[in-house]
Image (cartoon, rainbow, N blue to C red; front, side):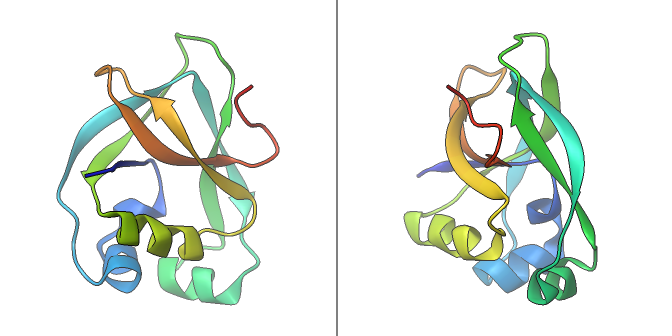
Length: 115
């Protein structure tokens, strides 16, 4: 199964129910080489689902000491596609390293992609 790393709203139970139709089971993890900031969300459906007008977003730094805490989930390919529909255009899904040595899909700032 694919791994999906979340540092933001995909960790919320209401967002998981709306996006995947179930609650996900996950474990704590850290993303390597990224830093966290916030962006305004202008999609009314996403704001309605998350209950938030601003969401966290990560940008690639390439600095090995930069870490972002979150949760890693086992999901299906179909669930990844549902997550793609939930995320707004500011986010791009990429494979990225975790401190565990695993790679997981994560939604990052589409303007600051890994090279």
